[in-house]
Image (cartoon, rainbow, N blue to C red; front, top):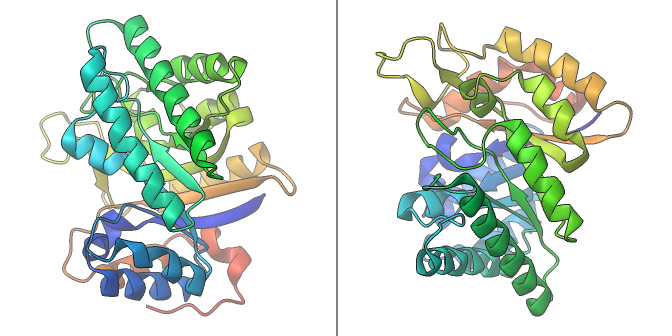
Length: 298
């Protein structure tokens, strides 16, 4: 496996979303650990400086349009045409921001399920087709990635389980729309699926995953659902030990020089996100064993 270590930074370093100085501090800090990529959304006043910071640090960016879409509840799969077009307009703006900062990949979700699965999938297909047409018209070199979410627990998204995901992506590729996937270890658990099995099924379209955690064993718990828990939490679906076993399986799924980007998606719930990240990073040695020559610090 050719591993690309990545971090979903809005969750771990929330101050980096709007403060460009904090964004630079975060980027330089992660680079010191041998992290190779970051996945983020930035809507501060100085967002146009993001590209320069990525260039200075050499970090590979993914722009997370998931965030504004979820926060504003603007869904690409909306069956109502005006609302669907509004969601497409939001994503076009995100595409412009990514392109302006030299970010080569943009991620989104399907959006919440409506009255009809088939009508929702039709609407989602139209939206994605319009986004690819916009990218072509603008002359952007940009990869679109969709992250399946949970369909019945908390987010109630249209595209979640890997079978529906696979069928939909095949449908798009038959139209010449080269959508890629990011598979998330928490979302597959929330769907009641085996993560390695799901990744194997969609591997043709997937070279990017998220290591994320969840607690779904106790529906009365305040931490139940898609809460982006750290891996240190007891009685959760993913611990450092279970992630290590999963990583060994992923090495078999992506052998040799096949590339796999692994993004850590954890919400910092303590005061110092930098100390927290350092502790988390060192609890997952299998992720950085190939980067022993890099400076590492807490």
